Image 1 (cartoon, one colour):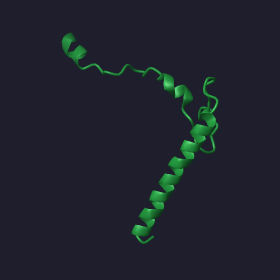
Image 2 (cartoon, helix red, strand yellow):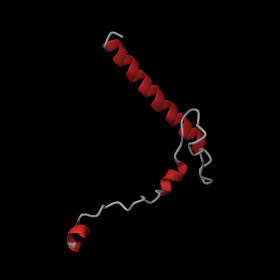
Image 3 (cartoon, helix red, strand yellow):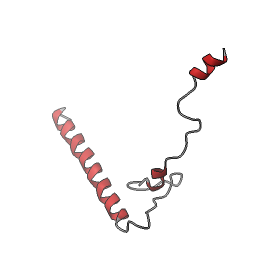
Image 4 (cartoon, helix red, strand yellow):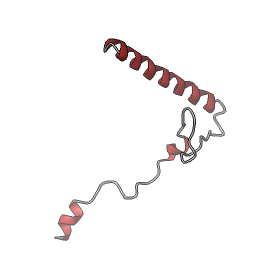
Length: 75
């Protein structure tokens, strides 16, 4: 019976280990208190401006698609 238990173990350890790139996850827009604050790598001085620019492009793209869908649906 023990071999049956071992063969059905979860592949992902619980709790999951932290991913190193999560350290530099970038919040776009207003940051709530319970969300981690933005951090920039020391060796990448343009990190903040790049992340903010990409975030703005992604939000603008989502807004454009939403507006197109609203027009198509007659809203």
